[in-house]
Image 1 (cartoon, one colour):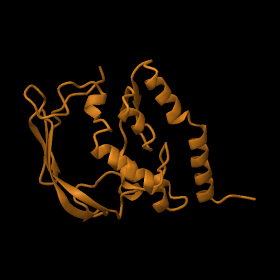
Image 2 (cartoon, helix red, strand yellow):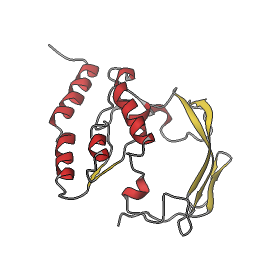
Image 3 (cartoon, helix red, strand yellow):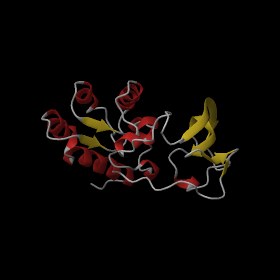
Length: 191
């Protein structure tokens, strides 16, 4: 029996899930107090219960785990290929709940950036001004969508939220669908 490319992709994704060390090992380390566990690219909400109960875990996720479910991924469509793989709709809903309940951490906090990630005196003025209720369909004609249009999983998807302007350390770097001419940021390195 031979497998078509979609079936092979599904089999590979399932194998990765089974072979991964998974949430159980990281939760055990966190609960045992052997150190803080940082979970990058969380595709499931499996570790959230452990964090709620006080385990020393920092959890971050990626937009594609929040935007897509495995049920809507076309067989063999490599635009959705990622590791770990995109999970089912129930899991996506659980990730959204974890995010809204404050159990998924923000990148600035995870990177040890003590003067980023909040609007407070002494913090860098890194601010995005956006209209959350503006909806649009992402297509090749989108004014600021310029990188790899033809391979994006978001192409053709109804999205919401329009960025009006972006400030980095108080400097305007994006406005009116245009980027600033010169970069003004500095590298952000974990401490």
